[in-house]
Image 1 (cartoon, rainbow, N blue to C red):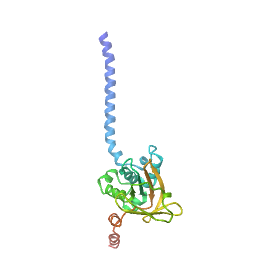
Image 2 (image 1 turned 60 degrees about the horizontal axis):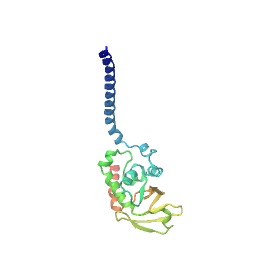
Image 3 (image 1 turned 30 degrees about the horizontal axis):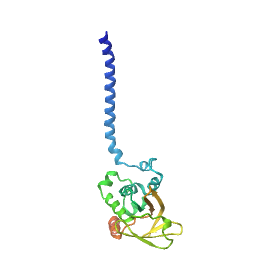
Image 4 (image 1 turned 180 degrees about the vertical axis):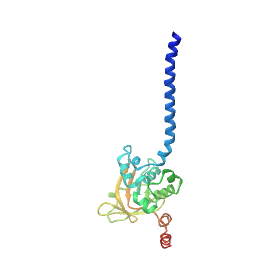
Length: 207
Protein backbone atom coordinates (compact mmCIF):
# COMPACT_ATOMS: atom_id res chain seq x y z
CA UNK A 1 0.00 0.00 0.00
CA UNK A 2 2.84 2.40 0.82
CA UNK A 3 4.39 1.88 -2.61
CA UNK A 4 1.07 2.62 -4.34
CA UNK A 5 0.56 5.80 -2.30
CA UNK A 6 4.10 6.99 -3.04
CA UNK A 7 3.61 6.31 -6.75
CA UNK A 8 0.26 8.14 -6.69
CA UNK A 9 1.78 11.25 -5.11
CA UNK A 10 4.98 11.23 -7.16
CA UNK A 11 3.20 10.93 -10.54
CA UNK A 12 1.08 14.15 -10.24
CA UNK A 13 4.12 16.07 -8.99
CA UNK A 14 6.16 14.85 -11.95
CA UNK A 15 3.37 15.78 -14.38
CA UNK A 16 2.96 19.28 -12.86
CA UNK A 17 6.73 19.87 -12.95
CA UNK A 18 6.88 18.80 -16.59
CA UNK A 19 3.98 21.08 -17.54
CA UNK A 20 5.56 24.08 -15.76
CA UNK A 21 8.90 23.42 -17.47
CA UNK A 22 7.23 23.24 -20.89
CA UNK A 23 5.34 26.49 -20.25
CA UNK A 24 8.54 28.27 -19.20
CA UNK A 25 10.32 27.00 -22.30
CA UNK A 26 7.43 28.16 -24.50
CA UNK A 27 7.47 31.65 -22.96
CA UNK A 28 11.24 31.85 -23.50
CA UNK A 29 10.91 30.88 -27.17
CA UNK A 30 8.12 33.42 -27.75
CA UNK A 31 10.13 36.20 -26.09
CA UNK A 32 13.15 35.44 -28.28
CA UNK A 33 11.06 35.75 -31.45
CA UNK A 34 9.47 38.99 -30.22
CA UNK A 35 12.71 40.76 -29.30
CA UNK A 36 13.84 41.76 -32.83
CA UNK A 37 10.44 43.24 -33.55
CA UNK A 38 10.51 45.30 -30.36
CA UNK A 39 14.07 46.54 -30.81
CA UNK A 40 13.56 47.42 -34.48
CA UNK A 41 10.67 49.74 -33.76
CA UNK A 42 11.35 52.29 -31.07
CA UNK A 43 8.05 54.16 -31.10
CA UNK A 44 7.42 57.66 -29.85
CA UNK A 45 5.26 56.14 -27.12
CA UNK A 46 8.36 54.35 -25.80
CA UNK A 47 10.40 57.54 -25.92
CA UNK A 48 7.73 59.49 -24.07
CA UNK A 49 7.07 56.89 -21.37
CA UNK A 50 6.73 57.80 -17.72
CA UNK A 51 10.17 56.37 -16.88
CA UNK A 52 11.82 59.34 -18.59
CA UNK A 53 12.25 62.46 -16.41
CA UNK A 54 10.01 65.45 -17.33
CA UNK A 55 12.86 67.43 -18.89
CA UNK A 56 13.79 64.53 -21.18
CA UNK A 57 10.17 64.09 -22.25
CA UNK A 58 10.11 67.81 -23.05
CA UNK A 59 13.17 67.45 -25.29
CA UNK A 60 11.84 64.34 -27.00
CA UNK A 61 8.46 65.97 -27.61
CA UNK A 62 10.11 68.43 -30.01
CA UNK A 63 13.41 66.75 -30.89
CA UNK A 64 12.17 63.18 -31.33
CA UNK A 65 14.27 60.04 -31.09
CA UNK A 66 17.21 61.54 -33.01
CA UNK A 67 17.55 64.00 -30.14
CA UNK A 68 17.71 61.05 -27.76
CA UNK A 69 20.52 59.46 -29.80
CA UNK A 70 22.53 62.70 -29.73
CA UNK A 71 22.05 63.09 -25.98
CA UNK A 72 23.33 59.54 -25.47
CA UNK A 73 26.56 60.51 -27.28
CA UNK A 74 27.42 63.19 -24.73
CA UNK A 75 30.01 62.18 -22.10
CA UNK A 76 28.61 61.89 -18.60
CA UNK A 77 29.52 64.26 -15.78
CA UNK A 78 30.70 67.03 -18.12
CA UNK A 79 29.05 70.41 -18.71
CA UNK A 80 27.56 70.97 -22.16
CA UNK A 81 25.14 73.23 -23.98
CA UNK A 82 23.60 71.79 -27.11
CA UNK A 83 21.50 73.57 -29.73
CA UNK A 84 19.32 70.62 -30.70
CA UNK A 85 17.41 70.56 -34.02
CA UNK A 86 13.68 70.06 -33.67
CA UNK A 87 12.00 66.93 -35.01
CA UNK A 88 10.91 68.85 -38.13
CA UNK A 89 14.43 70.22 -38.63
CA UNK A 90 15.96 66.74 -38.54
CA UNK A 91 13.83 65.77 -41.53
CA UNK A 92 13.75 69.09 -43.39
CA UNK A 93 17.42 70.08 -43.04
CA UNK A 94 19.13 66.71 -42.63
CA UNK A 95 16.84 64.32 -44.52
CA UNK A 96 16.39 62.06 -41.46
CA UNK A 97 13.00 60.39 -41.19
CA UNK A 98 11.53 59.54 -37.80
CA UNK A 99 9.98 56.27 -39.07
CA UNK A 100 13.43 54.85 -39.89
CA UNK A 101 14.06 51.63 -37.98
CA UNK A 102 16.69 51.47 -35.23
CA UNK A 103 18.80 49.03 -37.29
CA UNK A 104 18.78 51.40 -40.29
CA UNK A 105 19.76 54.28 -38.02
CA UNK A 106 22.81 52.48 -36.65
CA UNK A 107 23.96 50.67 -39.79
CA UNK A 108 23.44 53.45 -42.33
CA UNK A 109 24.61 57.04 -42.64
CA UNK A 110 22.26 58.35 -39.95
CA UNK A 111 24.58 57.81 -37.00
CA UNK A 112 27.43 59.58 -38.81
CA UNK A 113 25.16 62.56 -39.54
CA UNK A 114 24.04 62.79 -35.92
CA UNK A 115 27.68 62.70 -34.80
CA UNK A 116 28.47 65.66 -37.07
CA UNK A 117 25.41 67.53 -35.82
CA UNK A 118 26.62 67.04 -32.25
CA UNK A 119 30.05 68.37 -33.16
CA UNK A 120 28.58 71.51 -34.74
CA UNK A 121 25.96 72.29 -32.12
CA UNK A 122 27.43 71.37 -28.71
CA UNK A 123 29.49 73.72 -26.52
CA UNK A 124 31.63 72.56 -23.57
CA UNK A 125 30.03 75.12 -21.23
CA UNK A 126 26.63 75.96 -19.77
CA UNK A 127 24.85 78.78 -21.59
CA UNK A 128 21.39 79.89 -20.49
CA UNK A 129 19.30 82.29 -22.52
CA UNK A 130 19.47 85.06 -19.91
CA UNK A 131 23.29 84.98 -20.08
CA UNK A 132 23.19 85.92 -23.78
CA UNK A 133 22.86 89.67 -24.43
CA UNK A 134 19.79 91.04 -26.21
CA UNK A 135 20.78 92.09 -29.73
CA UNK A 136 24.41 91.85 -28.64
CA UNK A 137 26.20 88.96 -30.34
CA UNK A 138 28.58 86.63 -28.53
CA UNK A 139 30.54 83.78 -30.14
CA UNK A 140 31.93 80.48 -28.88
CA UNK A 141 33.65 77.49 -30.48
CA UNK A 142 31.71 74.22 -30.56
CA UNK A 143 33.38 70.94 -29.59
CA UNK A 144 34.37 70.48 -33.26
CA UNK A 145 35.81 74.01 -33.49
CA UNK A 146 32.83 75.40 -35.44
CA UNK A 147 32.12 79.02 -34.54
CA UNK A 148 28.68 79.62 -32.99
CA UNK A 149 27.51 83.24 -32.80
CA UNK A 150 24.31 84.00 -30.88
CA UNK A 151 22.13 86.74 -29.50
CA UNK A 152 18.86 86.90 -27.58
CA UNK A 153 15.76 88.31 -29.21
CA UNK A 154 13.23 90.52 -27.41
CA UNK A 155 10.89 87.56 -26.71
CA UNK A 156 13.67 85.63 -24.98
CA UNK A 157 14.38 83.19 -27.83
CA UNK A 158 17.96 82.67 -29.02
CA UNK A 159 19.21 83.01 -32.56
CA UNK A 160 22.36 81.02 -33.27
CA UNK A 161 24.10 81.39 -36.66
CA UNK A 162 20.78 82.65 -38.01
CA UNK A 163 18.73 79.73 -36.63
CA UNK A 164 15.99 80.68 -34.15
CA UNK A 165 15.16 78.60 -31.10
CA UNK A 166 11.77 77.03 -30.31
CA UNK A 167 12.48 76.25 -26.64
CA UNK A 168 15.29 77.41 -24.40
CA UNK A 169 16.91 76.41 -21.12
CA UNK A 170 15.79 72.78 -20.87
CA UNK A 171 18.06 71.09 -18.33
CA UNK A 172 19.17 67.47 -18.56
CA UNK A 173 20.37 66.61 -15.08
CA UNK A 174 22.86 69.00 -13.52
CA UNK A 175 25.31 69.28 -16.43
CA UNK A 176 23.52 69.63 -19.79
CA UNK A 177 21.51 72.60 -21.10
CA UNK A 178 19.43 72.01 -24.24
CA UNK A 179 17.96 74.64 -26.56
CA UNK A 180 15.57 73.27 -29.21
CA UNK A 181 16.23 74.97 -32.55
CA UNK A 182 14.05 75.44 -35.63
CA UNK A 183 16.87 74.23 -37.84
CA UNK A 184 20.15 72.33 -37.85
CA UNK A 185 23.33 74.29 -37.18
CA UNK A 186 26.11 73.21 -39.56
CA UNK A 187 28.71 74.55 -41.97
CA UNK A 188 27.95 75.08 -45.65
CA UNK A 189 29.98 72.09 -46.83
CA UNK A 190 28.10 69.66 -44.61
CA UNK A 191 24.81 71.32 -45.50
CA UNK A 192 25.42 70.64 -49.20
CA UNK A 193 26.28 67.01 -48.48
CA UNK A 194 23.05 66.24 -46.62
CA UNK A 195 20.53 68.28 -48.60
CA UNK A 196 19.09 67.05 -51.92
CA UNK A 197 20.45 68.52 -55.12
CA UNK A 198 17.85 70.98 -56.44
CA UNK A 199 19.20 70.71 -59.98
CA UNK A 200 18.70 66.94 -59.99
CA UNK A 201 15.16 67.42 -58.73
CA UNK A 202 14.37 69.92 -61.47
CA UNK A 203 15.81 67.63 -64.12
CA UNK A 204 13.67 64.77 -62.83
CA UNK A 205 10.58 66.96 -62.83
CA UNK A 206 11.19 68.19 -66.38
CA UNK A 207 12.23 64.85 -67.74
